[in-house]
Amino acid sequence: MIGHCSGMGVSGLIRCFLAVLWIAAASPAVACKIALVLAVDVSGSVDKEEYRIQMQGLADGLRDGAVSEALVAGEGAVMVVHWSGSSRQEVAVPWTRVTGFEALEELASEIEAAPRSWRNFSTAIGEALLFSEAQFLQVPDCAKKVIDISGDGSSNEGIAPQRVRPQLKAAGIIVNALVIEGAEARMTEYFWENVILGEGAFVITANSYEEYPDRMRRKLLREIAKQISSLDAGADTGNL
Image (cartoon, rainbow, N blue to C red; front, side, top):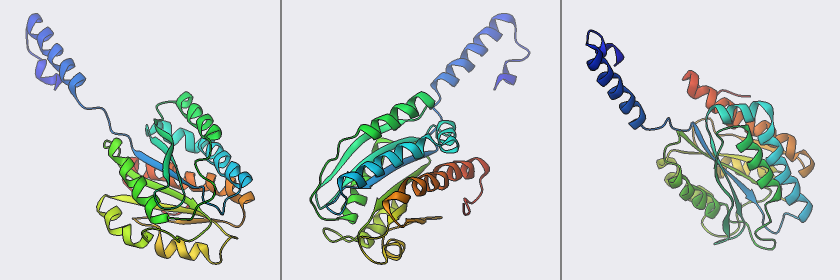
């Protein structure tokens, strides 16, 4: 566009460059590369210490060097949702635009301090997914929409998670999962078959809550760093 200003007189050049600056200022901002809902299970199967481990694991995972750099570079948006039984889903930490490392540290600190929403209710995974889907209406400019759901049990209340998959797929949402084994048998298999959705969707397993922080860090690396790098390169995310 600047090339069109060549060959003009001084006054014409000034007017032309002012027009270029006005168009640049009026252009829409570059969209964020990923919007991520971190959906945390706070149902009755999760005790006080396990809740603390989950929230600390999320905060520390976001602080990981590769994860934080990718989020900042991609101007990602992150939200935390607490979920339990039917009609018990709540935004624990609202959308935060990670525009710099200071914003990321504020987000991590807010996650660490977030109070628990519920304690003694059932597990409604389908309801949690639908609630999380609705939150993306607030971040329409983000290139990828991902729900990162963690839990230790199968859905036993509300709409079944497999029944909401068509709606999530139509909305272009990817669902990944971190499963904590122990409360029920074969939970990893259950989440593979009934919960995750979308191109490159995956499940990472923690065999106990003690493994949760490390598995969450690995999950965020795969979910954020590789997703953003794939957008930059136009390539498939592959496997971590």
